[in-house]
Length: 70
Image (tube, rainbow, N blue to C red; front, side, top):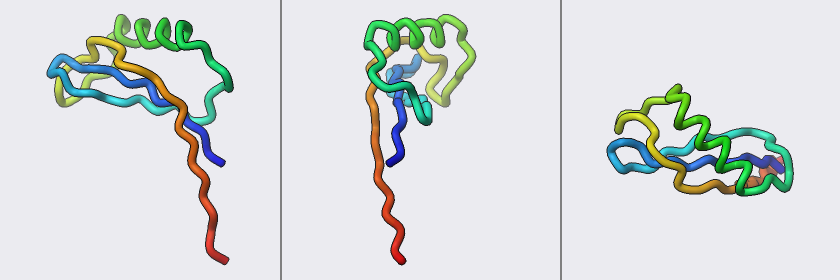
């Protein structure tokens, strides 16, 4: 099973953008994740077609199971 952490942001144009982190630690606290999102915004290292990231809009774990056909 594949597990990712999606950090969701709003950009200057008001659109949502997602940064995906593969194989994140389990049981992350929302307050810590939000702190990291705020640091990403403050560092201004990502730009999107809708402009710079402006605010954190959420975070979520996404799990996916892949079963190959034999």
